[in-house]
Length: 354
Ligand SMILES: Cc1ncc(COP(=O)(O)O)c(C=O)c1O
Image 1 (tube, rainbow, N blue to C red):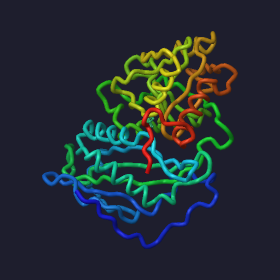
Image 2 (tube, rainbow, N blue to C red; image 1 turned 135 degrees about the vertical axis):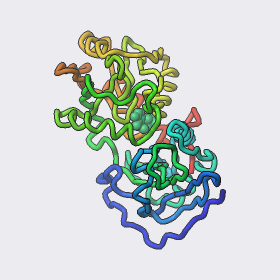
Image 3 (cartoon, protein in one colour; image 1 turned 60 degrees about the horizontal axis):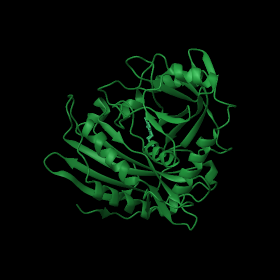
């Protein structure tokens, strides 16, 4: 398939103070888009001016939520050049989500190259200030106008770009986490490991309750016993417990996070033992009290690493250590961001230069 590049005649004004950029509010001048029809496959790939898309009110995505997406970032390096962190892994995960949601897979090489071409054309939109980046959102939706529950015959796949400010403005701050004892995010056999919109829609109600009670994030437990840690909002959870790194196994309900994967590689190299096992809420509460739970942090593209200051479960709140970010947590944050921004050697081949 050829990639057509259409002209862009006007350029939007960029936010002047990059520290004021709000996540997901502003988009660049261009987007990548391609179409799929059953029997024809993917076609009409083009980079065109960013703008609204037209959908039939009966488009299946609007009724049955056949939708998937990804999230990754472009970083500006000290010499002004651009890089991405493990972008091929995101495209592979996009295809895994597509398979789970009965959607057509994309040609990974073509799609990655087309995405990189879009980013090259929009290079000037990658912010320059410390901690900023350009967020990349690949998306696929079912567009066939048809009221009936079955996989659609027509799809649209597109990539949009959004400049984002630093996540931590006043320094890296620990979060207060609410452990949900009632609501669940994903069940065994469900769609938890797919990056599909419905999972996020289903999480809103609990997140709203948590926010109203003053918590930053919801930690989801397993749906069967409501005892074991799964993940948080848009992060995987990792714990330093008895000197070992403990994290939920990937058993279908948890997203296979690329940051999680990278953290596990780094801690292994640092000599830590890793336990991919079910960690119970009792272990968290007791471990915070007796010091066996030394550190806890979330890992995800948006935040990179987010230290946990306290956990609350059924009105019982426990603080971790002195409530400040742990030593290992900070070390991992610094290591990962240094690799991403090109300030540390990329020994793992994680960086794609543009
Ligand atoms: C539910 C969920 N878990 C974990 C993550 C972290 O994944 P990654 O590190 O690939 O961003 C995300 C973010 O994409 C997410 O949405």
